[in-house]
Length: 350
Image 1 (cartoon, one colour):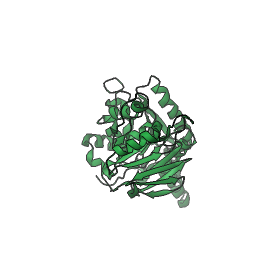
Image 2 (image 1 turned 90 degrees about the horizontal axis):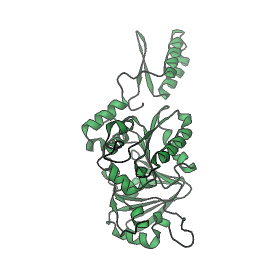
Image 3 (image 1 turned 45 degrees about the vertical axis):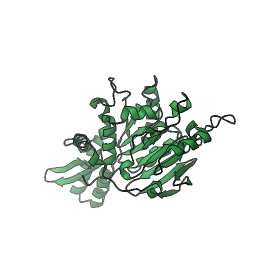
Image 4 (image 1 turned 90 degrees about the vertical axis):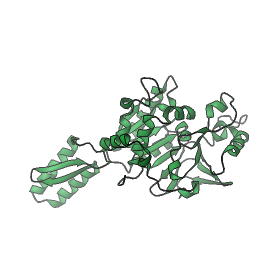
């Protein structure tokens, strides 16, 4: 499948409804068409009794921060497999197909993996991303997308033996074997308890690091800090208050706000065609959702098209060109036909 490239990815250590999260939402929105669709995936907190409130709070925050982009934010209530709100339910997960920004955040990393691994929701997230959608993963969501996921609750709360859990491995096809660790600089334990490294503390985390295979890369993300990943440009950049720590081949490097580096620093990065590993039916559904055959143009676009037609009749070509640019900025193409202007949504743009 050609003509598409995967969208950007942001990994956020924490602060999805704080200034850092707002900055991530707005940064990724700049390259999306006005009026784009965003989706908040409820799954990571689906085991919590207030998961609807957790996801709703994030959706409200995103809607406010994306107001200037006229974005529409949907909550995807995919909570638990085998229930009416299942990540395998086609109706529950349908908005993911047309979403151009998808967020998954706080909750449990291992629960996220269990509910999404092989699920229809995850297939649709990956298809949307392959067709250009921006992905934002915060806290538990960020941990879950690595090849190796840290079982935070099991170790910190239940005293399980130190181990890594198989993750969703979103970046594995690109040659990156990551262990993403959010809350890297956590200080909730104060002077009495070391809660750095996502509540593991130095001694436990040193042992956990030794349990990883030699080709793994640890990406530590401070709270209120994000790592943005541009797969098309093979670059990563840091946004936020803290730092990003990269541990690979016995070396530890740190990067602060505004700094960037080549993705090769995270491992043997290679371009990949993510659509090739997805079911053909999911790809077809995602393409159809992004390129609806008979999608009516909104009133704002129709008004601009009519004004442009009037400018053309008056031979005011400069005005006509200005109006065409406004129409395209809203994600539509206008073609002049003997019967008048014809409007079609841009491929991948609605």
